[in-house]
Length: 436
Ligand code: SDX
Image (spheres, rainbow, N blue to C red):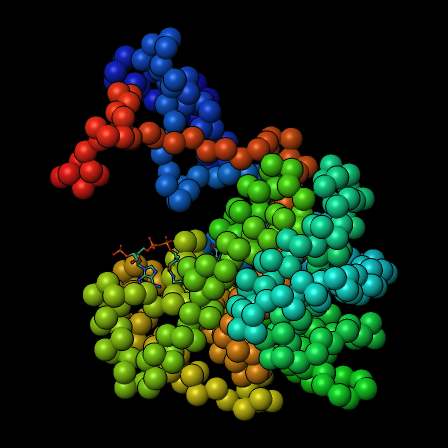
């Protein structure tokens, strides 16, 4: 009997089944052989929120949650954050290897020449209220780009896919900056092709009347590092959304909008904004014990803490803390950092958080840096979506080119009514009576 196999005895029929084990998994479809008779559908797995289900084979990102390891295409995140630019890492995620100097130069040049937005996008953006949330503006505007590039529906054409990928990576900062300027009532700023990816983003955000924007190099490098840290994270909620929507052969703009919509949730990418709201609510270090007591009693969560995969420190949080010191040296400190550090110290000593393996995640410190840079909390998730677009597109392309993948359509366990007799309206009992 193959050692790499599972023998299951179905006690209902006293029948044994041998299922092969591949990469630490059994194929769910192999369970369908386990039947009580010829009319039996066979067994399924029941796994709400996919706590223990692998949906794909992937070569893009590796995470070891117990050892706090994160690697993109085999390279440790710490090495990439120290030595690369974000566009270099985006190339790595999408093509599988780091680019040569010439390949990188060509790649940067191509992305740089896809930063402009169709002029109708400005009119679309102007339709939003002045206080519209920038993340909702981003999701809507990315979806609207599907109308500007209808040829993007040709998702089986590799050259077409690559053109849309370059457009999305190039245009995300432009859309983000436009939503930011809209919320302030400032005129939009056009891209400046002389500048790097982060510097041009800063130009579109913050240039006012000066003829040429000059970016602070420390802030530009900090943004680039933050973009690298947020670029991909294997099968997180928004990557799953990208793959599921993309599996229907939806174009990459509508698929990316769906992924960004998932990221907007406060349990996912929206957590960085929620951390700042939480720190504002705590107000001072003296209030921390009472706040932690409330969380332990089940009233709310410690935002920026915990992770589905990391059961040790999120390696990104460490790098973000290091980057924060560089930023604060330029911008001046953020008083919320002291509250965050004290909150982390107390939580990491508290049995409630220790037993649940709740450590600071990528969102705990990122918002504090962004606020020191001058961003309002509403912009924080937008700053997450910009780099994560490269990861979503890498996951999307890997799904489309995986011969094992097809349209995503999970099964369910039906627990509703059996068949019922139809009752005319005049004879129906009020729902409340029925609920009793
Ligand atoms: C991101 O998946 C990714 O990779 C995401 C991400 C990426 O790069 O794409 O890493 C980015 O989304 C980071 C996570 C940002 N979210 C937050 O910081 C929100 C706060 N965190 C939690 O909501 C939670 O930790 C999650 C959503 C991150 C993970 O939730 P799980 O894995 O479903 O865990 P769970 O909710 O089942 O929690 C297990 C226990 C529960 O207690 P019990 O019911 O066992 O008593 O831990 C508790 C939870 O109540 N718990 C927390 C907590 N997180 C979990 N209690 C207090 N504060 C928290 N933050």
